[in-house]
Image 1: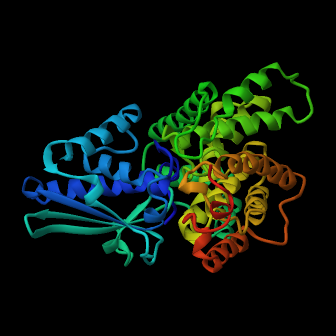
Image 2: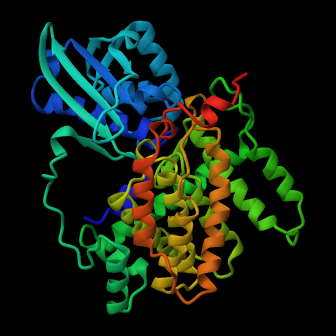
Image 3: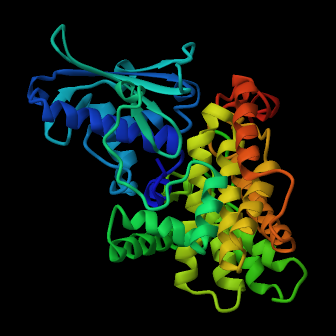
Length: 453
């Protein structure tokens, strides 16, 4: 099944789609399930077991806070970000939690949330078990996997028994099939994706939701440009976007490489907002969320005749690539390393830019392949379990890499030795071979070689 644009690009909160957004959605689904089953008022205790990467870096990624807010009935798309810290502190102080916002139970986060650091779940690296009790009786227990990008699966869904998907006019599960659809219909890749979306929703809804995604990306960038100080967490990482913005505003517009410095700025701005738990767009994950917005800002601010229609086409073409990466490999750093997050986002941005700059379907595919190929093997080793080092700078580097991949593809005719399917397959295989130390566990790499002060 082809992944929708509005699944890959979803408005939520930082700092992590797999550790924050996914667990919040899982906890909310669990609480809603209790209500739907008619047992919510019987519940007097809920426990949460976090396993895998959720246990190892969950505190730094805000997993415990996300679960609390999800159990309280909040969704990442609509929660008031500014009030989260006070609400979490109140729950810990009162030792009381309002399930779905209406049924109060005793809840001591220090006792009810267990970080099972020694347990490595299968088949995905991030898992949480939620249990609701009435006295000694277990009312319900569910296991959820957070599989990257805010996507969650309940254990009962692992056998593939899902609701019937809508019939799509251009279904594809490989880049070869995608190119075949585009060439046989004489359509750009963005239009292939748009017509698949039309099988699920109306044209006005598609445009409205794309506009909302772009607006949220712009707002995230603008917030990041104005905020100074130090990011949360024990590393004491200073925000740089506001200072860099002030410097670039004084730079001559024809200075060598100044456009790329602006691209760096846009990415830093988004990812500093993400690191502080701000409102943002998962694209396709939070840890890699600065890349697509940065390259989109490059298109809007530096490409003549750029317009909103081009922004929409960019996002739709990027969706095709993200869908292939998610379905045929993974977009989760906990499953295949940062190549799955930053590598996928870089490929999505390269493809989107190539599309709006007039690239053919084969050139768009080539741009995505170049981006994937030159992110292969990228590890996920966040220092102190925070989505800060090396994550923030990594988004800036990958944003520039996406533009370069696009330019290389546009200088060719779309013919190349390594196909996008080959690159995605290699990304998957590399991730399977990669030690778990380098998959968002903070057990290897920079996370152990950088001295925390």
